[in-house]
Length: 207
Ligand SMILES: C[S@@+](CC[C@H](N)C(=O)[O-])C[C@H]1O[C@@H](n2cnc3c(N)ncnc32)[C@H](O)[C@@H]1O
Image 1: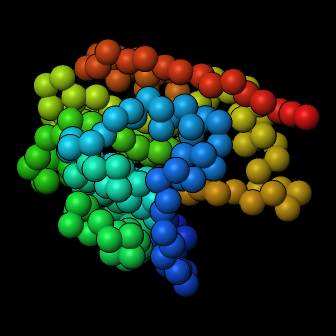
Image 2 (image 1 turned 30 degrees about the horizontal axis):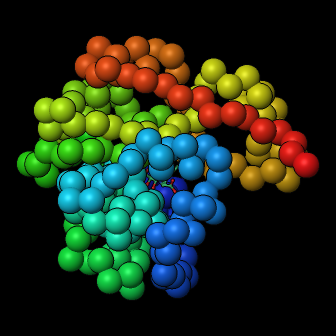
């Protein structure tokens, strides 16, 4: 197990009480960027979805409750244990298959999907070129991918990561190797996919 995988495994390996994922409040309580991501996902009833890097699994459970059949994947064993118990608790275990698998090994699942989704996973997977081919092969013809990512084009984010995170009592929520998605990686995606990027409004202060 490499150090990043170990980091995520320890992160999820804490006492955990599954909770009910309510369809309405899940999207209502999401942040602005995440709400935009959920809107882009659109109607999922009856479709087959792959989530990559599912973490604790709330998104996959929400999608299953909306009527999709979901394959939830993550390379952390404790993440997969969590999502299985969350799916059971929410009574959608028959609509979700959860696998501990590295994103680079997705071809082992031997399936293709109508929709592939992921939150903050693309910037973790290396080598990215190889991953893009795997992503392409996992998608059905006319399939779609919807991902939410942090971006290295965000100057404020990059400043904070360089100068603030990990200092002054500000914790770093991530492993040592990840890096916000770079333009080069978008270009790599564009070689295989018709890519559209959305940058929801950034609100610093609101009254
Ligand atoms: C930033 S977390 C996001 C988790 C979840 N999507 C969320 O938004 O809460 C990144 C996730 O990707 C997983 N991950 C990172 N690299 C991976 C890889 N190469 N293959 C599979 N999962 C990976 C980690 O275990 C972790 O659950």
